[in-house]
Length: 80
Figure: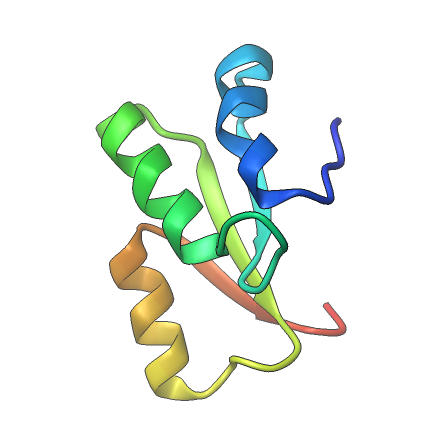
C-alpha cells in the first residue's frame, strides 16, 4: 500500500507500484482526481487498476457522473 498527498505524484507511483486498486480524492494539490483517473485510463485502458473516487464536497448525482466519465469505477462520499 502507498499513500500520497500530491496529485502530481500519483501517475508515476501507479506505474512503478502497479496497484490493483487506487482510491483518489477528487480534490488534491498538484492534480485533480478526475485528471489522474483520465490519465490512468489512457495508459491502462481495460487493464487499468480499479479506481475509486472519494470526496467530501463533490458528491451530488452529477458529480458522480463526471467522476465515472473521467474513468472511475466507483464513488464514495466522505467519510467512507
